[in-house]
Image (cartoon, rainbow, N blue to C red; front, side, top):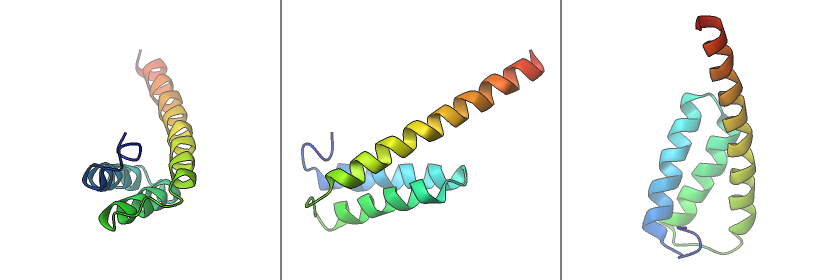
Length: 79
């Protein structure tokens, strides 16, 4: 949404949040992509941003799958 609306404040804030969360999960490559988007937002630079969005979207899907598997495994162990 932030990219589609070219809302630099929203992009900066959202990307910063994602980068922090990804560092928590030791996902440094994903955090780096989010940080690049954050810097773009800070600079109000939306040129050639679509590739970064696609990379982040793809990488977040992978992380989500990994976390889902981990949660299911934890439930099976404790359940």
